[in-house]
Image (cartoon, rainbow, N blue to C red; front, side, top):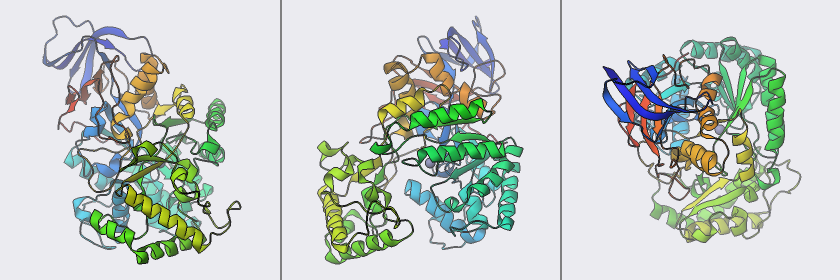
Length: 564
Ligand SMILES: [Zn+2]
């Protein structure tokens, strides 16, 4: 007796070869037979008549290692057919941490991304150790394994964590001794199961590193056969240089490189991906294993304008915030803080120095303005410098800043505090990147088992990414046939990740399977309603167990950590 028999579907096996009709037999967590299996009996029989049967989708870029302690069922991921996620991205992971800084590092990461923190971090433990039960990479992996999880996790370690551990938060080059210490820490993480290293070249503290420091770490990863993923140092005007840097890291260290969520932000940079895609192609021809992934949307991370205003915190109620926004004293304080920021090393917040790159995503009242650039409602204020040395803009005077602050805070009041923003990309660029044969797909999301509370907006990619790739782009826009698009989200990433027993439907492979309707599969999540589940996903099987039935995630927690 088999565990599961998927009967009468169209087998799209992940290789890119033409689909064929047949049955898939699963037992003991593995695919044991494919083809016409007359008379086979199973505990669970899935009628896949008229449906496609494919390998579970592999998410090349997620932040689910941050959310799994709070959202272990991975409902959002399973609802879109994901069975394996690469996590530990953009230089961030939840380990390794040390006693002295664990509290602040982990609280910063969890609160920054999700607006909530795991239980052991609730108490204001200052710099002391939180009661989460992990410090080392191994302890963290054990923690989430013990909880159980809905999807498989392919864990990589974030370079910011290594740097926070050894160098601290200083933005200075590491000493040779510190580089050796980070290499040793990385060796330990790899030995404990990490599959590679990620950097967030734009984010502190990791961004303090020189390219030589990154290459020194990448050599350690290469020696272990691991993967290096890069959130580039610049995704707008400097994107070409940034891709060149990622390629150089691959060439000089020998590591396999994955450029994360590839895009060119801002109108002035639309079209630049044509150049970066060619650079990566040329690099591959010359022997560097460099590829990229993309999420299928023309806007980036969604953020609330309110969280960008100094002096506003998530713990304040909406009523308290309304009172503050009306206060003269609060406005003056905001002006002072912005003036200070403009004179500092980092300059004004990015959304104010480049308001034409930022789109109004969702608003509390003026829905007709959704989709317009932020600059269009800001009353034409002069641009603020992104750094004191930025040549185009002089140092702003207090009166300019005051006018800007008044406009921003008034706008927040007009929109009843709900002003959600995101940086924009060109639709043509999304198509160019996604359409490239070697490009893979990453959500840049994290697992969600329920809606986030507070004022944390989420991007529709949490629920929509893979159905949007297969439905909207693959089928409706004709970007690729069913078999090539399925390969893009299964066989291709499995090869890059060196997951020898996943990503394909074949005898002996781990039974990660998704059954979906290729005619109707579609995303429904939007910027305004980001929690809408997709349609067209039927059954999801993770390691031979039913993880979603009729598109509804179960609480099987059949996932595992895919340790090195
Ligand atoms: Zn990133």
